[in-house]
Image (cartoon, rainbow, N blue to C red; front, side, top):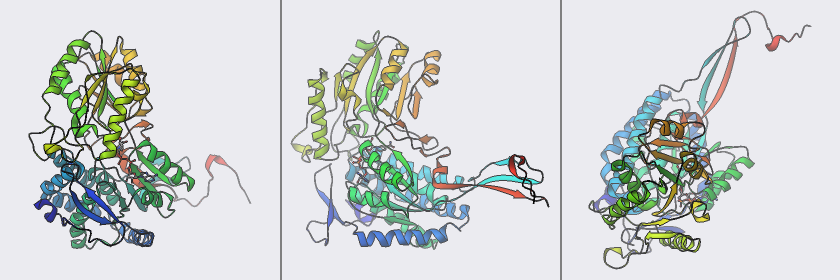
Length: 499
Ligand code: NAD
């Protein structure tokens, strides 16, 4: 466990921590890694005050200078990629490859944000009045509250924080109570860079706590923007609290993602895309593939190949690179998985690969499960809910219109894809009458995204967009400026007001 020391985290074996604490258990081996003190209301108040004070200075730093700090964070993350990737894998349970991939995503967003720091530009407009000029500019917004989920314990924060920082905002991060150590490790890495650059204290803070700490943020009038990633249940609560005070919220919530497998699909890519999408991160990605909508002509053939591929999966310690599937996050997740399987059976689903919890040997944490597959009718209620586990639902379709209708029939709208070599089908899927999701792909799966595009989804996924494209605009306030360089005062719309 050298990676813990490298990241400034001490493994403890007793109850020496004082005050109220959160214990972080690894789902990999069930061990308690460390305990972290919960932020008290008094500490919270000071943290927000410090972030508000720091904003007054930070907003005046030229954006490219802020970008230079973010560039150095990217360098530090390159240096710590391996230990941080291992911690992500050990505390959250995703495979080491995916843990390292998550840190790479942080590095990528740093690079993106550095370039962005010179491109925070608005438009110019022609005024209707003579000798007038109009333009818009984007100013720093203030303190940004970031609430994050357990399944991307470091990348989601960086999507928000790196953009917010080049935009001139300060950030307070409330990580998931299930992965507090990943947040502390990130804070340790960046604090050295901040100190070297004399960044004001309070540009980056963490608060540790359960949903209560998230509620403090969402109700706090000093925080103009709350960016919240997690379940739809959480998003509805946060949205209501933020709306109550007319703040801004950026919501990245649950998904229920489908791949349409056309009869014109290349099965050599459709099978691995479906497999990785369904079992990668043990089905605990917001973009995990939960539904396959398969053309009836190739249904049996596809099913046979998929079952064969599932037979080759190795489940076990995610830090062992031989394994494909690691554990679920905790016992609550195990119960949700088992309940969904029961519910699916009750509603008429037919499991062609059965589920179950693995026991003994390397499965001592009790968090390892078998990825399973059920054949279902698309309208079953369980199929419309997001179960954060490797349960895959198969259904048949006859026409593309029907497939798209099935794909769009769920309340969530995050990621979607179609596997087809048929140009008409592909274009239809991307057209206004196609997928209703924030992400729609052709010939790649639903899972995973590059940082260059805006990431997010519609409907119960919350409507927010983070990461690339123009998502940075969420973190700034827009101001329209009209400048009169004449010696007259003509009013807009030709209104006369003579005295
Ligand atoms: P969760 O909703 O249980 O918790 C997420 C975060 O919200 C945690 O930090 C938690 O403490 C906090 N929280 C919970 N209730 C709150 C409340 N009422 N007010 C304020 N904060 C509150 O989610 P989870 O189990 O950690 O993560 C899994 C969920 O996250 C899945 O639904 C998944 O699809 C979603 N997710 C979405 C995206 C996306 O980009 N769309 C990315 C990752 C995860």
